Length: 211
Image 1 (cartoon, rainbow, N blue to C red):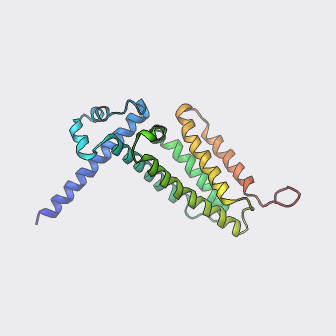
Image 2: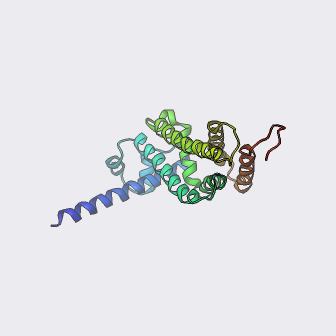
Image 3: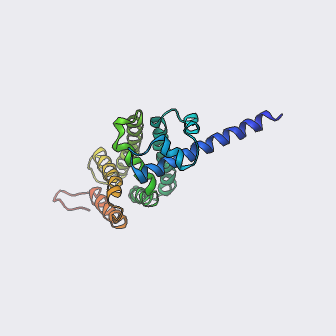
């Protein structure tokens, strides 16, 4: 009779510890950089032995994969409700940009941590593939937004794939910029990015003017 509750309790405790370790890794990465983020440094931060970390994560690479997975999941959870319910494709595009920028603004520690991991991705098994899969999925959804908006007559005829690649590349570059320039003006960046893609997606006429 007691087995199931005890198993659930053990599972909850294990998950809580993994979350604590992952958050500690995020903080050490953001504060000290990739090279200084050792299993020992992470263990010291939460005052446990390296053995506790090794029980949950077999290696630094496995833990850093979890860091990237956790931050990407957090970004998705942040984005979806902020984009959902838009009344038009253009509004959805503006919400998409705003949601990305607000995530950057409110999750600076997580962004700094992931930037550190990605800058050293070749040294971290599994991370390049993990991030590439996430980026491909994000680009696919964004490309679909541009394509559907064009089909509905809201956007012009610029290639949806190029628009999607350009917007994702700009947002990703901003993540890196924040690491080197914490004072970067995200409010102005958001306004200018919205204006840029409003123009890029405008329906054009033959004389080069936009309608």
